Amino acid sequence: MSDDVGNDKRNLGIPELIDVWNARQRSAQIIKKTPLIHSLDISEQVGSNVFLKMENLHEMGAFKIRGAANKILSLTAKQQKQGVATYSTGNHGIAVSYVAKQLNIPAYVFISERVPEAKINSLRRLGATVRINGNSQDEAGEYCRKEAKEEGYTIVEPFDDPFVIAGQGTMGLEILEDIPDVDTVIIPLSGGGLLSGVAMALKSCNPSIRVIGVSMEEGAVMYHSLKAGKPVVMDEVDTLADSLLGGIGTNNQYTFSMVQKYMDEVVLIPEEDIAKGMAYILQNHRMVVEGAAAIGVGALLGRKIENLGENVAVIVTGNNVNISSFIQAVNKYVP
Ligand SMILES: *Cc1c(COP(=O)(O)O)cnc(C)c1O
Image 1 (spheres, rainbow, N blue to C red):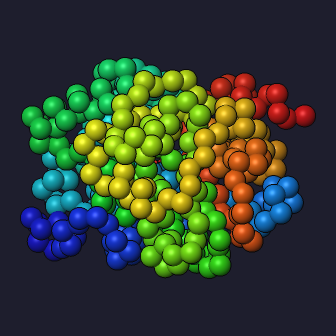
Image 2 (image 1 turned 90 degrees about the horizontal axis):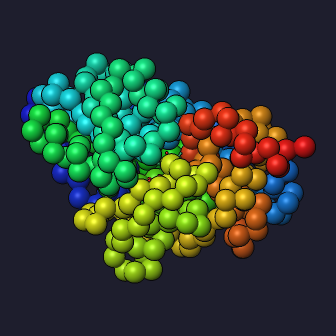
């Protein structure tokens, strides 16, 4: 590999299945396959075989490590040495910091004042330099772009990047290995990097697989952007699914059109059902997951999706939640 070409000779436009395959080979040293577990109680409730894809079980607690690893490993040695930068509501920043640390390269994380303290602490523990500016992810992003340009850092975008999208797509291949005849896949939706990559991988292999996006009721920017036919800007609100907050970027290049192309349906889930989803996973699988991760289970418990087919996979995306907020959220729903 020559120093200036980078690890990927393909000049990525809209990512395709081959890019997901390349992502899988490239990041195998860092990414371990996560379990897909059958969930009996909810399967009986909805009358389909429901499987949970436990992305909370990555070492750093969320799937974002997939996209971050693929992107950072695709950079040239020179770019890696200068360092990577990101802005994020938390999990993406943690993932970039973790991968950078594994590869021994500097990471700079720009976050907004709304990000919970637990997430800031884990970033610092990972050796990242944390910069706190602005009141939203979009504002933190402006600071990030300015400083990255001045200092020569490569920005690892949280979702709107072909390498990040292809990295998240590796999860789609894993789901197909475990349930080749999956009918419906339920995917939490924010900026849409996760949904774009996974849905593209799934539908490239089998176009009849149904892909459902799930977001919270208030502040679902992708949902409102799709309705408006272009990216819209919205204020951030308080939600249990705080990892689903943030804009999609007014100059969105990839995920808006990929979500438009690959998603069959999107549903919005009330806070109460998100909490029930968190309580369900605690009670039935003895695991603590965050609101954004439990939203798909919440959608099923609230009977928000019909015609599920025989086999359903629900992506449980991460576990970065403050324990006292978790207890407060589930308290009403556990006996
Ligand atoms: C980032 C994230 C999502 C949403 O992913 P997008 O690619 O932004 O749609 C869902 N759940 C968790 C836990 C996340 O960190």
